Length: 133
Image 1 (cartoon, rainbow, N blue to C red):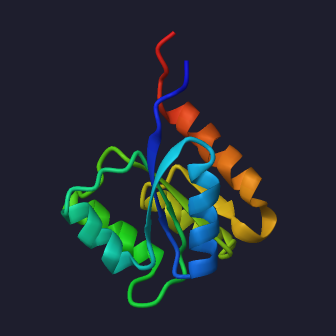
Image 2: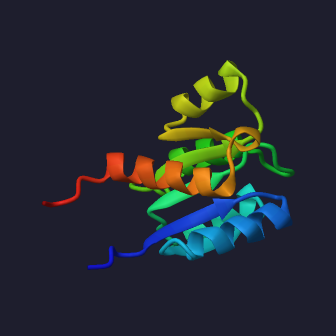
């Protein structure tokens, strides 16, 4: 039996990466939504989008990923979605800030192939969602 498609919202201002990850995740049984900025994410969530998982970059114009996460938390826009950072910011202070804001995972882009990113997202999802036996 095929598992139910999970909704993923991918946030990155790099259109090449955004398109590439959208394609890779759609090929791996995900229903994919994308946004190139934190402000668009807030609009989509306020408009009713309820992703199961949000994969986000930190370094973006207008509003960085941490500011976006803080705003999502303040407005309680995505209380049940699993938030995962995908960034090249890999200092411990950045990882700590992500943890403080409630992320479930922190993936460093430079250290991971697209296939590894998908594997890590699936693993985090499996750990967070109790699958009935």
